[in-house]
Length: 525
Image (tube, rainbow, N blue to C red):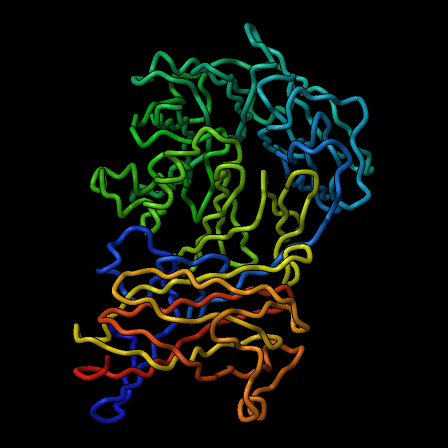
């Protein structure tokens, strides 16, 4: 697509063209030969904005845990005015992780630290399918309490409760390895639970993995529904508020989607519920519409579906799948376990453009007092803080989609001019791939004084006197001008892809567009 590419006529042989940065984000759906230049074949650690792409921020230590590692696998915010807390489950203990000085709560020992949580009123419940669920709360005097949850029920084995939700002013609890859900009285935070056995309704079997409240505008007013999702991808939708009253509890429908992944498979998003499934990240409102059945374009992650499919095929049984919205920076993040590491699939919730974050070893995520945190091996980190990964460099890499610049003729690209904005001088490697042959030009590590490394190609740190005279280096990023400098390039081909790679531990980098100078036609070889 050339609608946004601006050509400049420089005579019969030499041409200039300006190609905007790939603000359409990562594309792992379309064929490389058919992909528009607004997309990227690879976009790691660069976030797509409206008119530029920006290197993600880094992270710093928030709290170091004491123990033998194993991962902070549960991280959750407790919300009560004047008494907000962040709690973590590490090894066998529940910790107050609100500050670096927080300690474990005495008298609580868990079998495993992979808990699902739900807050109702001022009570936060921890459930792991192995221990009696725990309830945490703070009273009006600021005193903290944590103990067994305080529910009972006929035939209930409390240690089998593994997940929960709030819907219709009731608490709902999922019993592990069954299609049974337990629900409390309206408004109750303890007491007697009744059971609802969905095996009598389910057509596909399996076990229940999630319950959620779904507020949907069906065209005739707002419907407030309770949904149940099974391991086989069956979605049961109920209206009403009291399963014990047949006149106030009605099955609205049974639908089939791809199989969900894990007990943390749901995320509320703009009035909808997005489900992490084997086929991608699915919004229920679109997937359950009769008119849209089978339309892959309705999958939330359609643009990156091949990437997601590869990850779910290989790693669906690994712990760590989770989704979270970070409204402060306008993105939703899907945490993905990959072999012995993790990556994050990140979407700009305003534009729908995707990218991938790497280098973040995160077992769990939490938004606490409008800041984003993740739990790693033996440390809780605060994300989006500073321009390094706890002192280490952030590696950013973009391979923009190929373009033939409007003609299939052979071209020689001799010069490249990436326009960017940054807080200090930095180094990058920029070059072009041609005709769908990908080169990986690596950098040569040699730590300098400007927060980066010297690269093997197109070093950016030594700016010309002319550029220095017109560029304002400043601690005020908003006051910095856009940087522009021609660098040499040598590539011949019909289709051109720009590769933009950076490595820094002290810089905010934003890439706007790239001007290329090329020759076309005979005699260029």
